Image 1 (tube, one colour):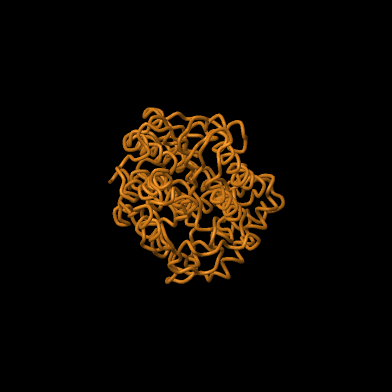
Image 2 (tube, helix red, strand yellow; image 1 turned 60 degrees about the horizontal axis):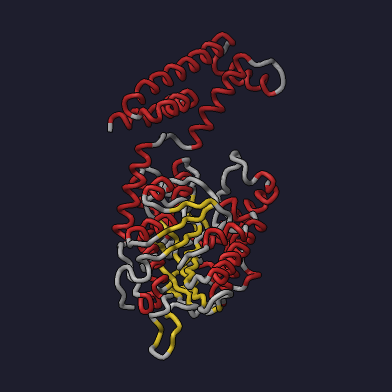
Length: 479
């Protein structure tokens, strides 16, 4: 396509479902920059890290649920183009909530399609996933001719529901409007794993596990590769896809169908890489350890299924804050342990897509973001230091002052073997407690100078961990 930069954008009204999320907000801001008349961000949440900036730029943030038909119709009325990004169940605990995954990804998409036909909206760009064709079997440099992965063979409800939704969207291409002349034109963008400053799903979870020392092994062989895409490149692809649905830019002179109408497109940075090698520079820049041991895919799958069973039993409490994310689930094992990467040649030839930001530039920006985020946040030791300090202090207090019964007798006997007398045990307990209190007060006073926004956090963390926490604050003070 040979178009101007703002073809089909200037003076038009756009709706972005999931518009307060990482990708949605970036897309809204780019539409603002390109001169869109009005942008509506439809989202179930009312605030996000980007909502204040969106409001300042004039984006209309509409609180609504795509599983409710009236919310969707209210948001889409009068729009010229819809970007359907909203989804549920991509990773973690969400993946186990089958009913809600289908309700959002399938029913919600049906509501969007019906609203487009009802209100005469000509363009719908759907954000899909690689998983519509991938389900654990190796794919090397795949393309859009690959068949959909069998629905019954998907190991997670997200992939199955996204496949159903994408097929509904593409089959709706050319569907006539109900109340006026014209047709709805649709296409699907299948992005790789998304990264960039502020990304919420992949990197935060990995980095938090590495920080706690809970990233003990790599999965799969070193030769395994997957695709990634930087946020700016994905936004560009979405903009180009919307242009590819313009009715006055037909595929041929004799055919009025838009070039992108009814078409899926794989989108990536074009540089497949092993996922653990991809995150290596980020973890190294944050001084976190990359796992050295490797776990075979079939062993990781067994572990993933164990987590799946355990969290299925805990289903009633999945949304509780105290229940952490599972370490891994089967679909996530396949994503990092089995090669699957795709060519974006079709998007290049039909939409004019070429990555604007190179992987090196994208990684540099992402590293800078995470270094700044670490500098502004409360740092601390691994989970093993937490367990050693908290359990150790609890056992010491129990040995010194607990009732002489049950396991306390055993703990006390063990303590007396080292300290010889109860007086010595109690003195050690008093001195250890006093040291923790003194270190916590010192940490609070030092943090007031070097990290005032987190001074309270440093006090409580150091009170619990003592020197295990204080050494991180001292290092920050030196820097």
